Image (cartoon, rainbow, N blue to C red; front, side, top):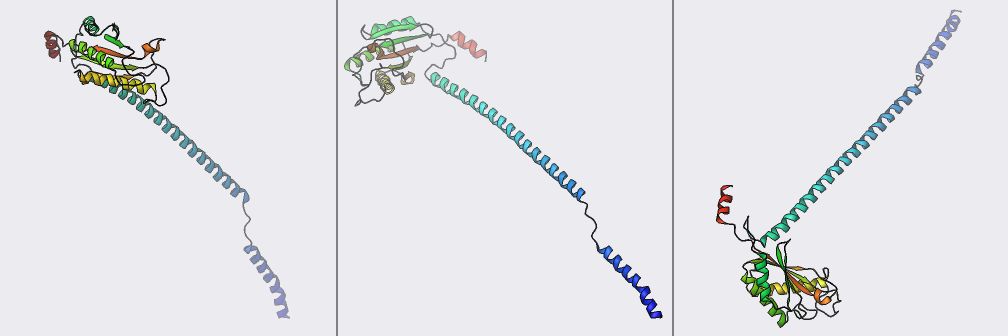
Amino acid sequence: MEPALQLRSGMPHDVGDRTALVDSTRAPPRRRGGVGWALFAITLIGGGLGGWILWERGRLAASEADDARLQLDDATARAAAAEGQVMAMTADALRPDAPAAVAPDLAKVSETIYASLDRSAGEVRIDEAAHHVVVTLDDPDLFRTDDADLTRRGQAVIDAFAAGVLKTGDQTLWIHGHVDDAPLPDDGTFESAWELSSARALTVLHRLALDGLDTRRLAAVAFGAERPAGADRAKNRRIEIIVEPLAAPPPASARTSSARSR
């Protein structure tokens, strides 16, 4: 009888142990609410960080663009200043080196040149505002038709002009080539009025150099057909020579006082 009692008395104990063992092996309940909030917080932080990075990049790009614009403006201003300096240096190379000078009488220069030319060669006038003499050579027989070669008549006119200039002393001469707006022949030497006017101005320059004028004081400029003198095409085919008198040296007293003030 005792073994039976022991068996019955042991059953509840064994069952209880197994029940406790099963309960102890169960996984703890998941906290779904906490994980969701954590993911939301991470997403929110990541989105905010990404937005800040994009904003910062945009701000830096705008700043770099502003700096680039400032550098471009500065470079443009420097280029314009350099261009002005080059042009000024080019003009100064044809002018005297005297810092302070007294210009000779334009009337005397004009009269001397006018006396050297015959009446049909052209005209001589004084531009008081610009302080130079303008010699307009519009003789229709100056050049061969649609060509840049001087005729014998043209050579004589240029030689006479050079002789008159040499009597006035050193002068700066700006030789302007002009032609009319008549179409050039298809089989001609020059393709445009610009080329023809440039070639004619250079032809006159070379002739003046042969006549003994200082080549350092000569410059050729082409205007094509862009500056007509009027409705007469014959008058538009012309050579204009700007005679810019070189300033005379300042008096000795002026040079002395200038030297002392340095």
